[in-house]
Image (cartoon, rainbow, N blue to C red; front, top):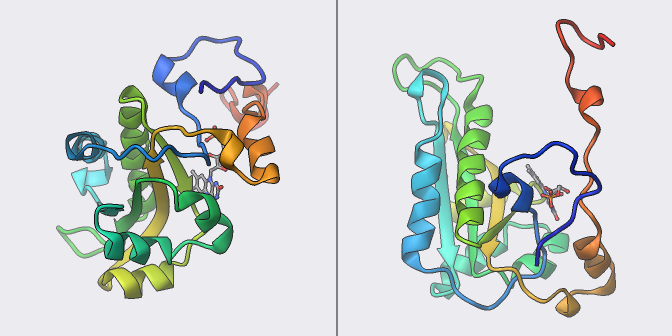
Length: 196
Ligand SMILES: Cc1cc2nc3c(=O)[nH]c(=O)nc-3n(C[C@H](O)[C@H](O)[C@H](O)COP(=O)(O)O)c2cc1C
């Protein structure tokens, strides 16, 4: 399924245009090779001081116990639909620089960069990723043995798009709604804040 957007006046790359966050996932598993390609794409993201502060913990449905561990970190509202995705992951940020131990104020930014790479690579493989902030970082730390000095940033559900008919009514409506964005003039300023 391709999602429409409310407007499309300026052309952007197909990968950007075709990316969206589904809630309906197909049962089809994701091949290990493809999964590794997602993390390889993440690996090549830029980062402050080339620190590469990102870490990823993933689980596939092949390993039921590990999958349930990740699933249990999600809030109920996300579990409802994410439990169909064949792969779940948690992104994690290292909070300090390796070279001097100082706080890395860009760690979350750079985990976001790596995740964006991962998501676009997924799109190129006809996969979709639905990122989630609705999870417990504390629970993730405990359940997944995330050490001190690192913190869970977001979770993601990965898979092939499924049939929206299988979703609860409210989620189905959101699944089929066009994607919306703020207009460019609200988010981009030339030279100074709110220059017209
Ligand atoms: C950091 C982050 C946290 C998000 N948290 C959730 C979430 O907890 N549950 C959810 O259903 N979607 C979540 N989303 C998905 C957004 O709602 C979605 O990206 C946004 O509505 C735009 O839709 P699109 O990705 O289909 O273009 C999150 C996305 C990001 C990047």
